[in-house]
Every structure is written in structure tokens, then in C-alpha cells.
Image 1 (cartoon, rainbow, N blue to C red):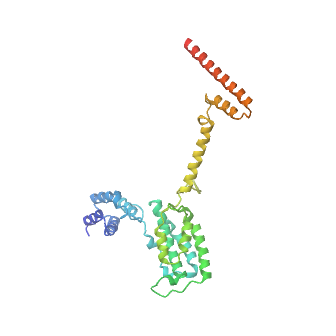
Image 2: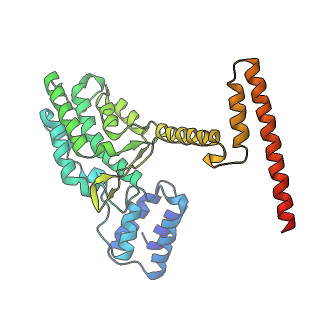
Image 3: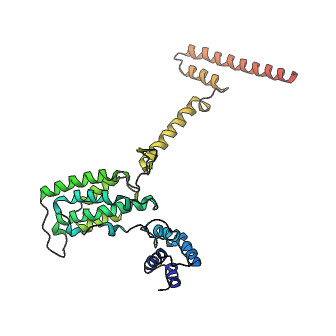
Amino acid sequence: MAVTDLLRTVRSGGPQARVAATSLLETAQTGSLRPHEVTEVKQLLANPELQDVFKDGLGASLRDALGGGAAPVRDVKALLPNPKSLDPKSLGQRFGADLLLMKQQLVDDRLPKAENADRLMEFFAAYAERFVELAHPGAHVPDAPVTPMRPEDQAKNLKQFEKALTDGGFKELVDRTTGQDGLALGRTLLDSKSTDELKAKKKDFALDGPTVRDPQNPNAATSIAVSAAHERLIKEKKEEEEARARRKGRQGKLGSNMLWNALHLMREGAETAEEKEALNKLVLTAGLLLVFVAVMLTVFLLTI
């Protein structure tokens, strides 16, 4: 298909747009795009209505190809082994080893953090799906007979998965809806009773991450997302501090009404009628004194 036709197909959207965009990537990687075609492709990449066409790293790969940059972002499925070939006794361990090997290709700094998080979870879900398939073989109709995984092998695999998820940084992923981290979400998938249940759970995830680390201090991770509960605590603490400052009067600064406040507090603390009467006289005297000082100050200022 000619480049002009590919551009037109991408621009129109629809199910064939992504296929055409992939063909554009292949053409761009060979350096066969003309200058005006490169300009049109860049316009398509910038179109917010076409973001779904260029998801999963396709857009980043196309930008790099246009600029003669790095290797394209690989699809997650291309990084996965054949799940049927995995040893049922060491699924979790194999996942940890493969994750360590493929981490740099799964998490690409050219992609948004949310997309990197989705890629990590998609990679894990393939192993988790195989685990659920073997742990609950009666929950589906497989293409070939499945030998049920023994309970002791299930327990062993779950421990392996737990370690691999922790070592692989899944705690740095956060579900924006529930606030759960990636480790908790991974456990949720492994607890599924069927592969259909697992896929339905994963579909509801709204991930963000992984954590961005300070290159000067790689051990100090900055938060990738503040949960709603954390935000609420911060807001409540701020409101409490503001209320405390207001009670002190003018945010803690000395004001002309502080004497009146003190005298009224003293009056409220009086217990007998005689004490209240004495304090009333004190309040009145203080008031007259303040008026006298104000008048004298005014006269003094007028005579200057």
C-alpha cells in the first residue's frame, strides 16, 4: 500500500488504522518517507483523537524512526515465552528470571508512566494466567488436557511469585482507583479461580508507575501517585493548622483586640457574682483607658 493510502487510513481511524500505522513505522525505519510525508506523520502523532492508534509504544517507536533514534518499543507479547512450555513447578521463579532479563525493554523512558505500568502488569499476567490455568483446570475447557498442579507446587509457586513481584518493583505501581500497589494486585490475579476471572480483574486496573528515582540518589524513590486517602489526610492537617492559627488571633500575630479577648476570657473564668462585678469594672476601666490613649494619640498626630 502506498504511503499516501497509509496516511489516509490512519487519519480516518477505525480498525485498520493501527495496521496502517505499523506499516508506516516499517517504512520510516527504512528511511523511505519523503519530507512532506514525515511532516504528515508527525501531525498524526500529535492528534489527540488518534492516541489509541499509537498506543503500546507504537507512537514512541515511530517518533524515533522519524528522527533516526533508538530501537522501536517492542510489543509485550513479543517478549513472552510460550506459556505452554513453562515448568509448572517453577512458574514464579521463571517469571522472576524473565522479568529481570526483559525489564529494560518493558519499561521504556519514552513511554508514559501509566503505559509502562500496564506493560509490566501484562507481562506478569501471562505467567499468572498459566498458574491459574494449572491450579484450576476444571474452570475452563482447554485445547489439550491439563494436569492439575499439586497443592504443594501451588504454595511453592505463590512464594516464588511474591518474591519476584517484590524484587521486580511492583510495589511501585499504584492503581489510581483503589490505591492498591502492584504487589497486592498481583496477588489478586493469582487468587483467581479461572482465567476468565483473571482477565476481568486485570481489565479494571488503572495503573500508574513505576516510581521515578532521583539519579543522584537512586535509593530514594519519589512517590508516583498520592492516594486519595493520603491527600485527604494532608488536607485535614492543613485545615487543622489553619483553624489553630485563627484561634490564636490573626494567624498568631499580635492584634489590638487581644487585650479585650484576654479580659473576656478572665471574666468567663470568674465563679462568683462579686468576681464578675470586679472584672466588669476592670473591663470598663480598660476600655476608657484605651479610648483616652487613642484620643491623646490623635491629638498628638494632629499637632505635628
